[in-house]
Image (cartoon, rainbow, N blue to C red; front, top):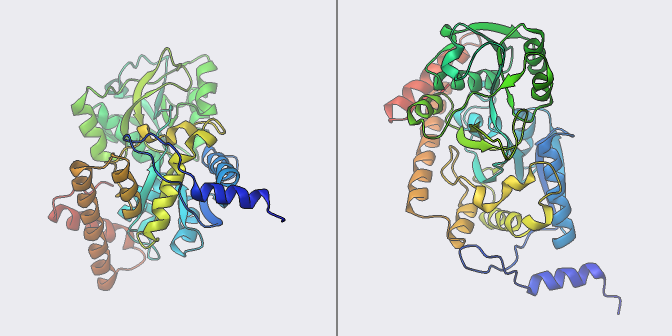
Length: 386
């Protein structure tokens, strides 16, 4: 009768129920279109490799083809999403939180604050922190006072992250010697060569391993979650950070973890206009297929349901919320937090509309938008950040 294996698989999936133990309830299989498209980080990155692995599971289990479009920077990952050329983006903090805030590249005339929505995120085993040369006597971040700290030209996110770690130690850039470098790699080469004492990286960066093997050695000063005052200072600068116990990285093992900070990478996002049913089913499929893609790319286990932060800094899409409610993971506290984030986005959108209408020259655009943004957020009781 010419019935294909593909047809059998699709029919079986349509009628079957997976026993996915989430909040004690079994949910029906997700239903997705035959074609989906995401943007992700550039080829060869952890984010891209994870997206490809997830695409393999979607194809093998559901017959869904996932096209992954690599993007070299935050704007190139967000533009296809804004234009509707892709449904979702597996991106980072730059194209999620900073896009929401209208900060840095997203403060330019052609962008402004974006009403980004979260579906889910990868919270893995690595840390994202300021590493310090082990030969300068630093044990805590407060000990960086008077030491040389890297500043990477053209990388505001790296510099904000470093500033946040300085704040954990009660310091600012005025308390350290700022050493400028042309790029991330150069800053860590400068650590190895003795030009600088501290620089920001992921704990599993190849540069961090090089520093560990160098004569200077490497440490990650602790930022324990129990230090609530330190974390308050840190998240005032960079609220997207969260405490973590890193088990992967230079000087780090599962037996010798590091109490440090991290933020999700990648974060799966969409625009609020994306169809609620599609977002719901995409979120559901990511969890139902977790065992099929887990282990297929480095760090991919961080997509697990028990690793989600449902009170992060970018609001969740209505379709994703629908899934988390069914899974028993979304309650009044999560909803109240989400509502506050939605209000923040509305305040930013209104501030941008008024700022653009008022007009500013190219020379003063960045400074005037920063001031207008700060004024609007403070007036509504929000911390401006950046």
